[in-house]
Length: 317
Image (tube, rainbow, N blue to C red; front, side, top):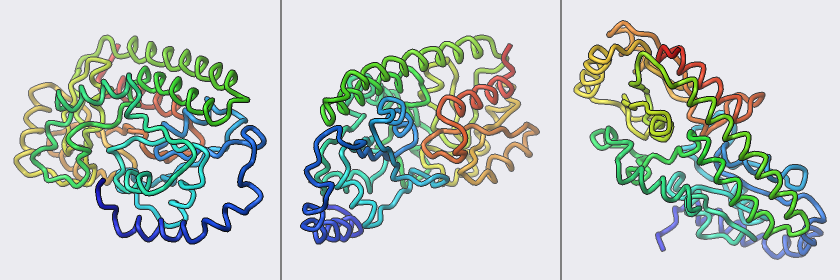
């Protein structure tokens, strides 16, 4: 077992100190289904699935606050206490080191690492083998996720596969509502399949299939819809590309007839804007959805905003 960070050790100690009081609290030992199940998630797409599959039978919160870069999440003692007390924790191992450490050091009632679900696991391994983030290797990233792109949820079919796993785990934690969880998961899968079909149709014919992005988070999206991702930076959105890398990207933009470089709202757009200015192209926005900036829009609405930006930036029929 890896050595936990000092912050996690302190947080776990604080949780342990309050453990006796928590065990004696009115909520301890409550029967499943007596109150909404507390579900704790770590990135927005998992929160979305938990909310849709859980419905009124769960109370869902996320460890990543709105507008915060999920890659660099740090946990305070009260965050670890939430994790330890949760009825179900949904997380993606290998994405947020602080969460991985805290999960190892705490004992929530139920834990689902979505990276272990068959469909997701196979694609994450495929991403690692194929090197979705090949550009990342030369930039000294602090958050390289083991060299594999973790943003599987940008392929709606993979997020749909998570719904079944979440329904099964919720049913184990709350058997009284098992049938409801399964029905909601099936309904969500139907919607996400329709979203996938919408993307496929809209991106079928485009003048460009080269996707130049500030942050190499779109490997799964590119693989699903036959787009070639070219990352200015690698998997760490805060990394600084070398002058040689910028020159290389500029050559790609000119050779491939690229007219748009895609930046992100939660990442400083300065590098993308400077590069775009030098090569005479536009800057548009894509959202990798690991953090949720606009609380008025859900996963599907944000993905459709992405689709509109892609259609315009790639000049799709």
